[in-house]
Image (cartoon, rainbow, N blue to C red):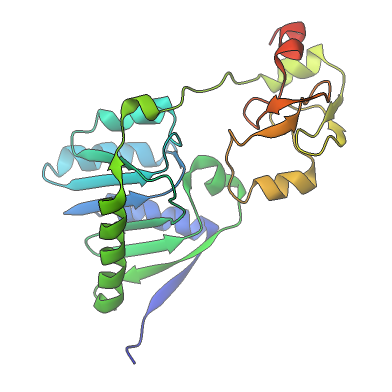
Length: 236
């Protein structure tokens, strides 16, 4: 049996290692993540890579409609980047010519800052057979994907100013998933129990059941927790 040497990664280390992987890419860089929200530290590294390595092959694979318009616009400015969509994607894997990282961590800013994640790092020089297995599976994922059309990008929902909201509204709010009474805060419209469940995937547009202000049953989401009627009354 071949001994497989891998390095265990915690949340913070995984984020750091992904940044290093991007920075050290020379021939190829494939970023596979269902949800894409590129943090401010990674964007300049991608820009530098695109400018400094003119022949590099950069591929990003995510789910349809799980990349916002701003990030799509940023990526489309990079000449070596190709974006693909695969609706049943759940894997998170990041690979260049030397290193592969498999982790629970989405390439999503919220996940990197708030969730507890883990993963493993594989060095091609230490375990080339394992690296090759991962690369073959990634090639298969890319083969199943379709080119990401810009029309798939979701326009950002209006964001609420929490400080302004507190000044205009009572302190009481409702959890948008279970309707439990909680402190009013449009930036955190879930109770602690429901938040832990939501944070497993951290999908800001996942459909929820109740308005954070009035508690009425309606179609809301983490990024849009207030019904239209309350939104108009509060005049955010």
